[in-house]
Each structure stands twice: as C-alpha cells, then as structure tokens.
Image (cartoon, rainbow, N blue to C red):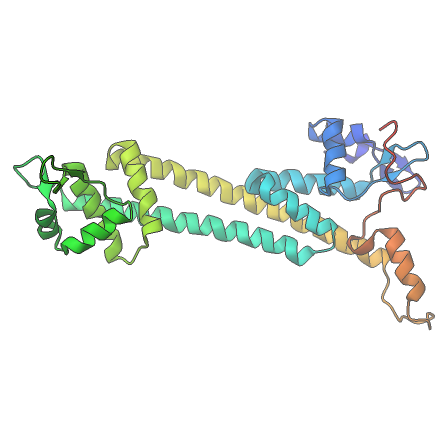
Length: 294
C-alpha cells in the first residue's frame, strides 16, 4: 500500500475508507468491517460522519493482511483485536500458540515418515494363507494377543471376523497396519499420533503414495512457516509504531513540572486512544456510532 494515496492535513497523511480499500485490494465495506471488529484501531470521524484514517491504520492493515497469509483469520483477527485492546502480551501468546501447533504438526509428520520407512524395511508379510488369525499375527510381530485386542479396541486395527466361528482374521493390509502400530508403539507414540498415519495409509492405498503425500505436506508446512515469519515481522514493526504512539501520547507520570502526578493526564490518555496509542472512535467531534456518508 502507498501512503501517497491519502491527503495531507497539516503534518499528517489521512486516508478515506476508499483509499485504504484500493491500496489493499479489498472493498470499502471490508475496511469498515475491519475497523468495527477491532482489526483496525478506531477511526476518528468528521462532523458529517465520514471515517478518517491515519498512518497507524494503514500500518495496522498491512500487519493484518501479512498475518492472514501464515496464521489465517482464526488467529490473525484476535491478535489484532488484542493489540488494539491494549493486551499485547495476549496477542503474542496467540502467535506463540500458532507456532507451537505448527511444531507439533511437524513432529507428527516426522514420526509418520519414520514409521513408513520402518514398515518398508520390514518387507512384505511372508504367508501362504490369505488371512491370519490373531495368534499367528502376534507370533509374527512378537507381541501378545492382548496387545492386538487393545489396538483393535482403540480403532487402530479392523480385522474382519470369520463366519461361523467369529475368530478375527487379519488380511495382508491388517497385518501391515498391525506392524505399523507395533513399530510406533515401540517408540512410545500415543494412539492419537498413530491414528492419522493409518488413516493416511488406507486413504492413499500404499506406503509410497503416502510418503509422497508426506513430502507435499512437509513443503506446505515450510511455506506456511515462512509466511508466519513474514507476518510476525510486519506485526513487530506495527507494535513498534503503537509503542511510539503510546510514548508520544502518554509522557511519563510524575515528570518535572507536574506536581499533581498525572491525574489530569489520565483523562488525556483516555481521549487520545487508551493503551494502544491510537485514536478512539469519534475523536473529531462526531458521534461514535454515526456512519452516515461513509
């Protein structure tokens, strides 16, 4: 976005809703929605009710649009709301949580890939029969039959039942799944980590196809990480602008020449935009709720 799209008033550049909208490639209604929802700081109003945006609003829009690329609206929106509500630590906590969730996804993907490699290294199941009973599978894998029953109860295995006897029958795909579960459980992976691997294996139809899907997912995670880093950098710059606005609007209390300690300054701070150093709604004298003409 370019600041020259606005018009200079005194030493400040001011923007209309349409100026911000055109520079970001969104509608003017979207700009209004952003401001009303707290994604943008409150805009002042003219006496006729038109919104008046300043450079801080342009930078907020830049930050939000950058956050959207990596964090998505579910995280980007409350981050900006918390910043404009004065809760910067809370906003950063949401950023931390998004990075932590991405890390967990990488860990799970790595575990799944390792399990597939182990499965491929074990080779095909050697059996002259199309299906094995539970005792035979247990002996093949070196586990107890009770372990196979637990895995079935957890929904990890789905062997069919023999008609008449009700015995469990493990087809080659079931034995493959049991081997994969055994490999991951031996590495202390929880059922919730194992289930997505099995679901992907069954969906893709083969370990090779699933591995290709894992590679694609890994590339997508890397791209998202880069987008998150870029968005966090723009947010960092915006937080610096907000902090500078706080310092300019709210000088240190108790400074020389102010024996009262700042009780009047508290009301000045309220009218200047609260804790975020940005203008409040209706600051130019028009009622806050008036949207006529905008």
